[in-house]
Length: 147
Image (cartoon, rainbow, N blue to C red):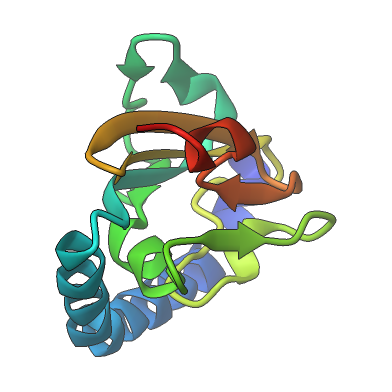
């Protein structure tokens, strides 16, 4: 894995820079969606992390050391996920890596990845963790009929 990361270090750095640029561009849109969702007790993304699957534990995220080039193995994707909120919902189809989403990149090429999202829906705290190629739908079915 170390060799694979070394071979792809420049590519990862470039993709990280592109993701950071995209996040800067989508920040205002995400803030507007947060305001709109807050006004109707809708879907508010509190925090979202994406990266090395083994870093995700039942108690949170055990942030592994950075890679040898100083890049994180788990990245903050809160803004890109909030930007995907439409009518108090987020759906990301399965079958493809989430690293292809705008504002994302693959921080650990060749290794398993997960996405964990903490969010408020109808003023209740929820959390979901999915594998990289798994479908994501929030809020989940049971949460739609709460409170």
